[in-house]
Length: 411
Image 1 (cartoon, helix red, strand yellow):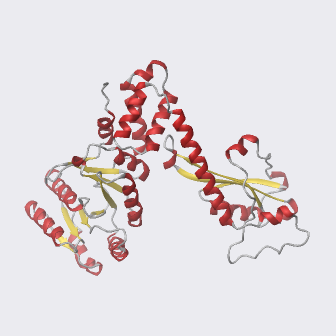
Image 2 (cartoon, rainbow, N blue to C red; image 1 turned 45 degrees about the horizontal axis):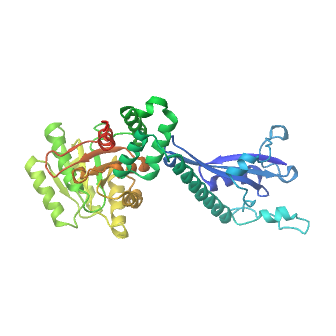
Image 3 (cartoon, helix red, strand yellow; image 1 turned 180 degrees about the vertical axis):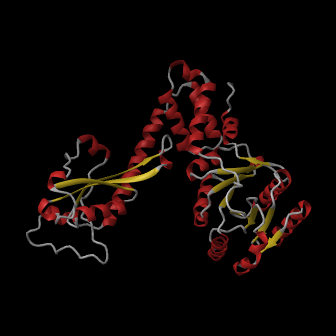
């Protein structure tokens, strides 16, 4: 019997490795999935580990290693069995285009016969297992956080009041319980500093518009209606032109709303910035030569409704022809965390590589904003906090926002 472990980002890829090395007669002994991402492991990279076995005389030489080099593994021990309850064994079903496995003969053992189940059943078992593990983890964590030291309880209450995702706040508290002890648990300033460090490690990079590389730098702004894309472009174009001495042009493909074009025209006329309006992707070849001597081109796009598939396809065609180096997704901080996640999922097809948070002046609860920055794993570029042009925007500084909500001064 040959027993090997295979690791891959997805179950499909792991099973493909099993098939390629051990053949289609391999039996899946166990599976487990994990994520690696520090304190916030729910934002880390996923990995699937599959342990598979095949009889020596059935491997058909597909394993690609000699008998002396083959790895043998001990049976699953009690601790692993507790963490990962045994699932039905399964044989990998060959994909289309490959020779199918021989039919089961009368001599085939019941064990081998039971192994030939649909792979979808295995995936469903894994999904149920992950849900069970999450429930157990959340239950254990809730018990662990009962009877917290007063300063940690104060921090947890502040995070909850600010709207942080429950998993984020609880994992911060748990990590603080692991890291601190004794008199440290009574020092609120120390606790706040450590909590800020943990949250900042989850937020990641700050990345405003980059003025480097080939010109012009094409920067597109996408997002739902009402998140402030047009106003944000007016703020940035004015700052880049007047304060940073950059040659700026604005390209609007938001031709559905008359007020959007009119608003941009007014802003651009005041600061003497060229505005180009494109009604159709086919017009881009005539517009692009006029933009080539600019340092940066800011692209205003229409707000998209989640169900407007046609408009989304039009947007994809525009961006494919423009090939922007940066795509900033604008998100209002007044939006719920669940809605932020839905927006991110809907706009992921446009490949945003930056996040702009708008309307910080309309709320003092920034927990959803920080939680979303952690979940999205995208750099944050700017924040806006008013309607004034120029002004009322800044390069993102999540640390100051976190400290404001966590209240670093003892009460």
